[in-house]
Image 1: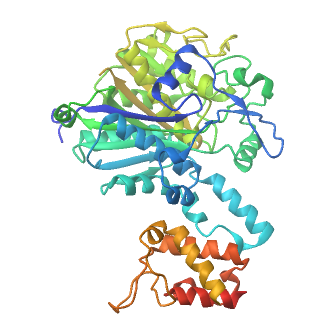
Image 2 (image 1 turned 180 degrees about the vertical axis):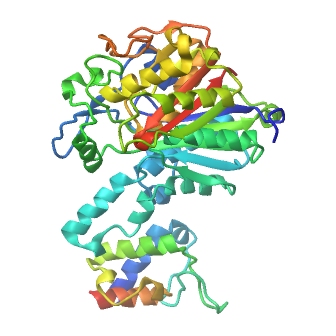
Image 3 (image 1 turned 120 degrees about the horizontal axis):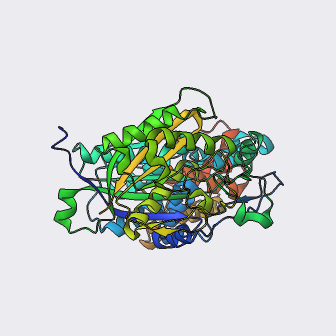
Length: 409
Length: 89
């Protein structure tokens, strides 16, 4: 399909399960107020990390049958719930044509339970359906089965860039005419002991005590000490303009462009020169047909780790040039923590609402800026601004870089 | 054996409540999945439901079919399940 014939890709439905709330408005309330939704983790054994973004009060019975609940694990249930909410929000009555889901670990928490039983009681005592509760693609499969999605149903695993990549894949499917309506989503459930311990061993997580939970995630701050893990899920309905107009759908925003690259450099560390991350931003803007100077808001990956925040700052400077000093930047992980494979889509919900409300959410806890991170990250207090174009960028382990450009409805 | 049959019947209805609601008769001859003989009663479980049924029965009786030579794929009727559980006890 030629550039001129490309379909516009509109966002017509949003579903959320996050530590900051179970609706887009609840999530926005926390993001716009810079009110961290981080709390103490309840762990069976003490670990250096003590805080996280827990989805509290999640009840799968609101969305699933008893049989579905029995057969599924938490990551599947959260994605399912978010998908049903997105479909309801969009008022969809027909089956979407495709589904793209990002997840970093799938049911890693379930795998840990199976291994525990295996070691303690023997293989024959493991959950007979355990495999189906841990395979990463089973969350998307469950949603596809429920909504009768018979087109492409793909699970993308690119660490922290997973759901950002899922949005890009979904955008291309609608833009190129593969489907008129697609779902894109992301999910992560990794607040279990083995996962957290593994990240602790990489010294990647904040070790702030439970009493300092709200102040633990502090991207671009001098005193940041690592990621704050979070769980959650979100799903967006992406729809061609033609289909949205025909249905009279409410439009939350537009997906203008996307790009993915890889540092091809290191298993966990980003390239210090930010070159590939910067190229991702440039490619996403080019895909949107825009100059980087057209971007009004950057939703940073902002992990609150020493290396990443510095490298991302370098990447923003490279990609935006002199505009880097003027563009508004926000770091949503300061409020909702790091939901790994789901972070891109959860943070994209924040971007869509920032565009709608013409408001730059603050970066919470940015009290003492790192001298090496010297851009306008909107510290502590948000502000109204004419936001028409915003970019969501995420960078994952393995050098995975992904960015999506959003526009106003 | 009757007691085992009762437990199996109850477990089948737990896994497939609609069979209880429709008062479907569950006998030793009832096929779990399908039957070539049109006169044979069929419960119409799917493979996931069959696995759930076996898992529930293993827990109920404190046995593991995996520790025996019995293969789940060989269980075709309710009677097969009853016999398998009885044999594993």
